[in-house]
Amino acid sequence: MRLERGSEAAGKFALKVSNMDTIITNATVITVDGSGTIYQPGAVVVRGDRIADIGPSAEVEARNPDVAKRIDGRGRVVLPGFVSVHNHLGYSVFRGRAEDIGHDAVMGLYVPMSTILAREERALLAALSTAELLRGGVTTVLQMEEDADVSAAFVEEIGMRAALGIMASDIDVAALKQGRIVFDEAIRAAQIAQSTRLAEEVHGRANGRLTAVMAANTASTSSPELLRALRDVADRLGVPVSMHIGIGEAPDVKAVHSGAGVFDFCRDNGFLDERAIAVHCYQLEDGDVERLALSGAALAHCPLMNQFRGAIAPAETLREHGVRVGLGIDNYFSDHFEVIRSRIAVARIRANDPSVVQSMDALADATIRSAEVMGMADQIGSLEIGKKADLQIVDARRYGLAPLNDPVRTLVYHGHGKDIETVMVDGRIVVEDGRVTGVDETALIDEAARAGEAAWARFKDAHGSYVAPH
Ligand SMILES: [Zn+2]
Image 1 (cartoon, rainbow, N blue to C red):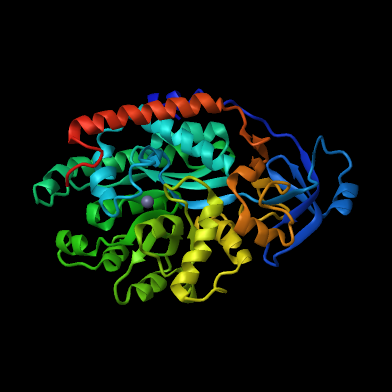
Image 2: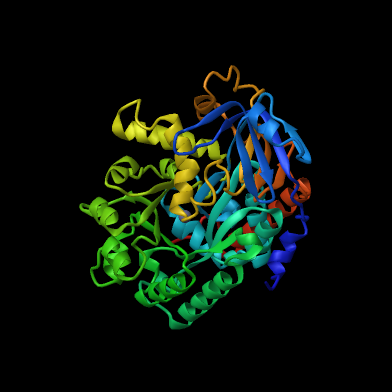
């Protein structure tokens, strides 16, 4: 792949790390397999990029006497890496700016910042989020963002698993501000070219760790021609499509697409069927639950983001209708354990029932079910022989985690990303002793912070405040 200038700016923080056959012994092993198997004490053997053996510790140790690297798992819990099905990695730039301004975030911050943030700055901010997510046990992300190509090199070098896509749109934002709806052909051609180039360059790279997704922002900012062109590429490469759907855009969609309903428009233009991942769905109209279920599309449920927007997707109702549901942290990058807790909390508040969504269910949502949504469940999402070695090891001898009466329940309700000691992706240790391997963390944090500050200074010059008038 061509290394973009922006990618190089972030790439210098990541050094190559290598595989070493590893056995983790005497740990509590939560497999999240189909039977909910937990080995206590258990062991896991990693050879190359795969899980070669797993089971009761004594048996696994006896079967594998000659593994090069040994990790003592006493007092530790091993579980699959988290899979986050919706992310905008460079959106860490909005940290501390977007959380209190409600629905104004999109037109007041996200859209205007997209013309201000330089590629080099986005690359640094995306690198920061990537390192943070990996440190917090997230081993796979679906990254869709403007200029997402700048995040590819760092994601590849740091060792994360990712599906990458440009978040395309072809509406003329300047004309829109003057009340005119113009889908611009030149913008469209450029977006299709950028999306296609990224997809072709990354799909299957790095031992298959990088894949592509064809993504659009919303139905109200996309022409039918744009969506159909992106879908054609998705079909050619056999990759998913993803878009924000059901986020209150229905009036705009009606206005710009001759009265069309959101779900019908998406279905008719290739963004709502078995290949599609619909993001959010927290503002649905009558019949949308059935439309989504009938379409076969999956839901990227982002409960942590939803709750701060004051609207919760009816995830349980959708699942009862047969919709596949996975979890995304979106751009609230703090801690994936918070996403799992939020998943449970918002479902219980919605149902007014304190037993809805049990802890094992929520953990499965964050791992194997999210892998299913991304079409990767045969490779990742649970700890089973033959699957990719994507896992995390939590140090359970921390404040908040003792006594470890029930490992799943204790971790789900009381765990934090900072409790994670080791993370492995594709058999490579990418977090060790709580530090991201091969990354100068202080330098990365400092440079990403400087990039964000520089962008906000220009934003304020252009718009007079930290929220653009709209
Ligand atoms: Zn989003």
